[in-house]
Structures are given as structure tokens and as C-alpha cells.
Image 1 (tube, rainbow, N blue to C red):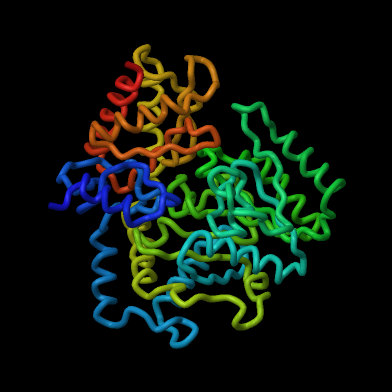
Image 2 (cartoon, one colour):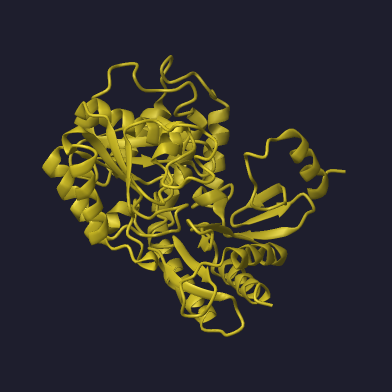
Length: 428
């Protein structure tokens, strides 16, 4: 008999411990904002496959597009025999690029691939090698993207020396007393002590940090980075892997600031659950690498490309940008109400643009001391209630909400009620 217990036993025997799993339940089927496990238990999904399912599980338009493509071809390798869906998707991405002027796009398979290639493109264009990232950042698990990631455990632990030419400066964190002025002072010190700005190819920043704790990059910081980049000939890369495709109430998170980047990395909700990523950038920058310098065997798979074209249609037709803002207002209102109760775990710092919402669990009401153990209890209680939740943050005490933007009001209310019960149960 196949059930959660038997599958967990098989998983432990067959799969290394290096890939961890947040919840000990196995998916059997999913639809919209709901999924069912191998024991046929129903859950409301507030995790969205880590922000991959902005359009929900198995959106009918996405599934229809993929089924049609299955009857044509599934793989040719774009570098060997190209195909229209790749070209059509890049045309659509170029149209919505968050900067003025001509754009070009290239497709890959994973977010880490997108970041790796953004760095390669920046180095090719500038002739420089150094890249500056931020503490708390998450950019991937390859060696280069692990180097860019601003957290040691678990992403760098035991993996030896990281690639050279990567530098970190503090990310502004009000909870930790780090201001934008502190960040800019650290960049000034870095330029004086360790790396000449004429040798810096790019800054890379998440408009809202994902794994780092759903911390929005202050507009003041983004404006200052743009000014520094223009002054020193440095490129500004916005890592939109988690913030892209309507999640923050804009198509891309950087658009909330009004600051224009030079390159953006995209993945996650781009293709509605199919593996696809890319880099979108200013045309003259994107053309810097030599022919053959970019690509990948599975990069821009045709099934994923048609899925992405359908996703862009769904975002437009179902007005998911507007929906993200409406969801965010509703969720923040409910979280504020929860935080005012005296029988829940202590909550703090409700935050996030659009529907990219998070809050911290702390040891005392009105305090800021992280409580990772209470956070684990909340997630376990939520799962017992039938709600899939995710945590994040450098202290492991942030609860993030990433339900599909297509979620109905009824399912949202049911999920928030389950969250409220979990917050109370974890305080018992």
C-alpha cells in the first residue's frame, strides 16, 4: 500500500539527507489552491511550491497549452533546431521588461542557472569580474550562486572554498538595527579597502529578499545603487526569481521602486509549475557574450515555453496584478487581527508588497527576539489543520504566505482560519 508512511520510508532509504523536506506528506494530486496527499488528506496550499504557482496548480489554460505542444514535439535543443515558442516567449518578455529601451531575453531551466548566466553576461559586457551581493540574500545552490547567497548554513557549509570575486554588504534590516545609511557606508568601505569599483561588474539584489525573510529592499537603497552603478559603470541585476510575475502587485518586484535595472533574472512562477528560467536585459548588454557562450541542453524547453505563454495570458486576463494587491490588503488585515489576540504566539513585523506577505514569530509581544522553535510549532500545527505553510529568514522565525494569486475568497478565508488556529495551538 502506498501512503505517506511507506513513501517516507522509501524516501529515507533512496534519497540523501542533503535535500530536506519541509512537510512529511506526499502529494497525490492538486488543483487550483488545494492539494491532496498520499493518505487522501486535503490541504490548502499557502506555499505554492515556493512561489512557483502564482497561477495555481494545473491552471486549465496552462495544461491545455502543454497538451497541445505534447502532440507536436517535446525537445529539439534550441541550439540545434530552434522553435517558435522560445522566440514568442522572449518577445513577450522583452515587451514587459522593467526598463526603457530595447530588450533581449534568453531562457534556461532553473533560477540558479539564470543567476549564473546573468553574472556571465555582466562580466562579458563590462570586462570586469567582481560582483557585490547582500547579507541574507538567496540566489541559488550552485557554487557561484551559493557564493552570492548571504547565508552560510546550510548553503555553504561543508562545500569548501566559494568562487572568488564575490563580496557581501549588510542588507538593511530594521529588526536588526541596520539602516540604508549603514549599507551605503559598508559599500564605501568595501570600495576603499577591498575592491576598486572599476573592477566591479554588478550589484545583485532581490527587490524583496525571499529565503532571507521577505524583507523589501528600501527604495532609498535601490535608488542609491542605481546612482552608484551609473557613476562607476557597474550593472544592476534584480533577482526576480521569487518576486516576479505579479506576486508583489507589479509584474516585477523592482517596479515598486521606480528604479530600472540592467538585467533581471526570472524563474519560479514564469511557467506555472514547469521548469523554466531566464535573463531579461538591455539588448546591448545581452549581446556581449560570444555565440555559443550561453545556452543549455534543456534550456527553454518547448513545453515550458508554451506553459509560460499561457501564464502571461492568465496574469493579464485574470488581472492577477490587481488581485495580488487585493489579497495582500486582506491578508495583512487578518494578520494584524491575529497579532492583537493574547492567546497566539507572539507576532511582529507584518510586511511585504502585494501578496508577498510575511510576519515574524518572536519570544514576547512587542519584542523582536526571534523564536524559531515556536515557528516550527506553528508550521506543524498548520499542517495538522490542513494548511501548507513555509518559513524562512536568517533566524528561521519568519512565516511567509505564498498562496496562488488565483485563490478564491472562500479558500483564502478557510486558509487564514486554519492559520489562526495554528497560531493559537502553537502557544498552548
